[in-house]
Length: 349
Image (cartoon, rainbow, N blue to C red):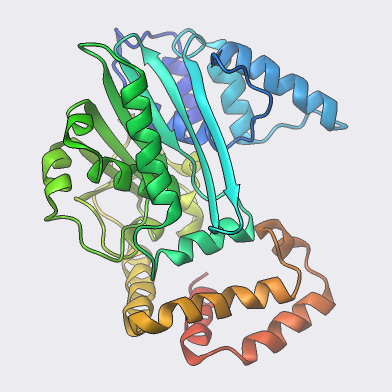
């Protein structure tokens, strides 16, 4: 399979002048922001130095050197000509239990004339997953407002007559990128060269006719795998370009399953029947819940996890019998709306 790792290996010797920034590059940086970084210099750090710095941290905290795909991607990018001198700056990690927000962002200086503002998606914590579901009843969310502020600050801080900004992210990160660009000041919007939404959910409101979106619609590029579900939830922005992907169903949300070629992400003819079926069922579940009941529905659903000590998505893979029994007992007490959602998801997966 030719995925983003293969892309780096075979395109890594080409400069951005020879092969301009494309959808595969947006995928790479939207993947790297998914790593947890600490103790970074305020002035920024090149990808080559970042890879070395991150590798040292791994060796300090692990007994072995088994790397996951994101880590391998960082090491490959830090070693190749195309990416090694790209500077990552303005890294932000802002987690607020009070606001139910997990916000991560960074600016990558691609070339002297192009910067890429990227937002991270869900980090795996229960707090981050609940933040996603809060979008069903809250608009804008604290994270969306933070994303707009971050983008406008970045554009105001980096000045240059010909300087342009690409903006993007994967999953929730793309949703934040979309909100930030649609609602940014028109002067900021003029500096945006492209918006890359990678399997990113939409909004509870339709923004396709909003003045902010109409000003940038020709620069919005939305991608999702053939089995796209997340990127078709709620009211989407623009037209989705399906990408050829390996794996089954919802697992295609992982961008390492997406196929790339020399010109970027490899387009597919259409989304799959699975994508049509599951996204329509979940959207129907959303629409069936009265607006005034959605907050209580989300709180109830996540209360099942919280009461049983599930604080991270990884906890579900190490669940013991006592927690499993507690979750089953709690689930039987759920409202009919949430029992229906769980039934849909478990049947489809």
